[in-house]
Image (cartoon, rainbow, N blue to C red; front, side, top):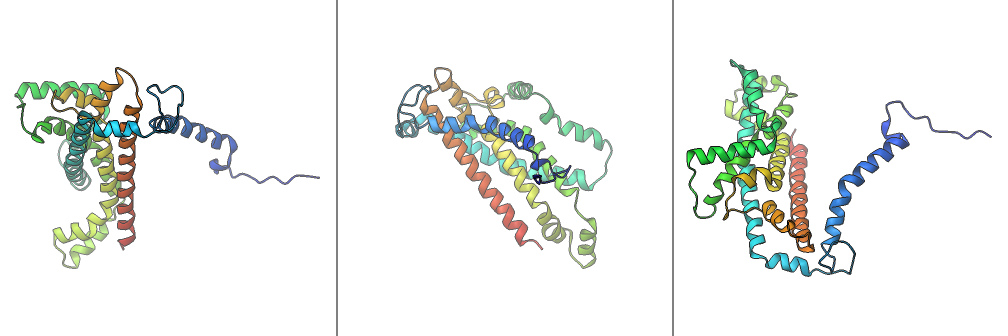
Length: 278
């Protein structure tokens, strides 16, 4: 008796067992360390080697750690400001490159992509030399004392937004813009009611990328921060140098959860915008 086997489409890669096993292994390697870190943040032991029991006391220690909370607030403040400014600059650059032709446009595109392609440590050293050369003031009150880090984050994150938004605008039908102008709409009305709704998914994706890049950045922040402007990644690094305690895992878990919440909210806003657009 012959056993009937389902014929696999040559292009149906997801139906192949070896492909499923490969992707399963990739997901395990990517997310298993994060899951283990979150699990051991509840471990009732100072060492993250053996499970000793369930507890939440290390979350209480992290919450009562004034230095950790200050660093966390600094990171959120920098990430929020960076997201707004980098999204605006990135959108403007994307529209410039998408819509206009000007001399040395290719050179400008390559120059704009430098913060993406150069090593991050080179970017950090360059920003350190820049602020030292111009004599950037220090000892300013909060949140002005975070200005150097914020400027550095904007400098390396807005090209990511520009690339995402420009890729989105590459599929825009210019006939819609021409039809809007023919119907009597001004340039601003055309942009707000025709172009902006189309580029909104790219803006949301770029803003989310800028937020996560800024919130998780360590190298550039390490070179541009001072003794009174410690961010969350730098603070965690200083704690990890001694030992990886459940307190560090608890603080890192909170950071992961906040990142996931922001991503979920932005994806929801993006989905609602797509459903509401004609």
